[in-house]
Length: 385
Image (cartoon, rainbow, N blue to C red; front, side):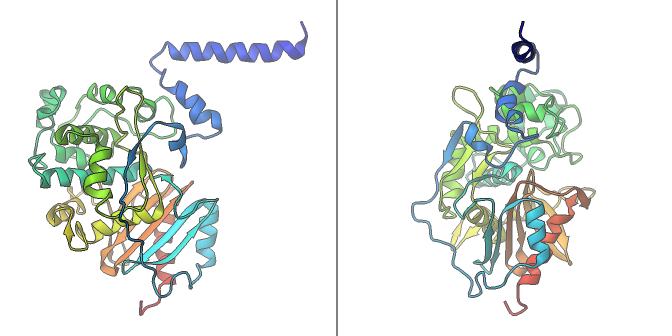
């Protein structure tokens, strides 16, 4: 047989056999990943992967008012250091909102002010905001409401004492391992799942809940499913009506859903929108749940969510990341690959950074470049602004 024909045939046969073996194993979920992620040269999820998944539309406002522009809008150029960081780490959007006006914005890699981008785990903050709204509307009694009241699978053993607050504060004790680059992993399985509801409801509580912080995407997935059950609609619809439209989001967003017939949102991730609209959510939190004169979230809930639950884990509250810079308290939504909405209430400042890469964790659980994005923003802002 011609060698030029034999080698490709062997390769094709081997690939087919491998797929058959995987398909018949417990790792069949990685088949979509082979074609959708890994087969495209990516080693993990990426910014515009929402295009290859099913999504549910999160409707924006039909009466959106654009962000006002600061009197110094884009007149002060970024430093060489910031330019170099944005280039090295493949930033696609860098936005500074000062005193509720756009002070600076820049886009890269073909992105624009309207380009959608997967925010990944920033969605966890959105889910916590919905929890606050559901409590405000008495759809959920309080942070102490037990999860077992919604899902019988969590109504016995260690799970009996599991509360919605434990899910939001990442202290459930859930059997879950958080990884992003290992395809043979529960987090990856959730990303490609055809039935994410079953996947999560089959997990066990293996440690006493409410005792210790441990970041697990399964917590937010379960919380999102619970909120949907409590309010009677998919969380995409609830978020749209109760938060996204009220804050004047200029564009429809997209929330990825699993492969089930009715589609369940990947609550732990996968909300795609643009930098300007992400900044609106930052303003809502900065202003303690108010948008103009309208109360969207209870201020006491926002305050609780943006303060640590556990003294020994000061970096996390309920769905929000917490740190400081030059003695200023900072609240953030954070996502895989370095998606950030950075909120500094003391200075009426919001910084949005979206991009393809992030640095290694070096300072208090944050990549050093996270603080670089803040530091360089302050260098651009005149003292009298």
